[in-house]
Length: 149
Image (tube, rainbow, N blue to C red; front, side, top):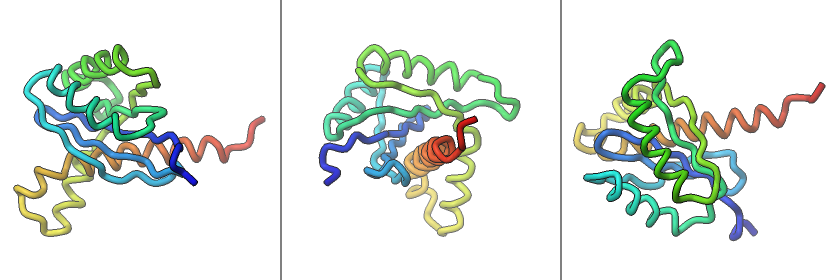
């Protein structure tokens, strides 16, 4: 039924790891998918493109870490370099999405599970990507429910 469905992926690009989340076929629920580690921009791109080969993607949502005032800092500028690489390579939209505080929320959620620090480090980026992608999916669903004037 959903075999040819287009999917949406979310990326939380950290300094060492990139967490990847995926939306379900109905585009209502985000789930952790994968985490990649890379030593260079090219290594990162190669690994990400390998992951993307396994899915029919319609859109990629990339978290931009804005500060509490909604302004871009050094991290946002660093991530925009990755976004530029993606836009050169991909034929579908790459959308920037405010990911403020998702890593903090993910850390709190993982701390509540009593998971070891080592295990938290391995999944925190995936959880943050999931939270960021879920906020995008919720926003899109809310936009569809609003009546047009």
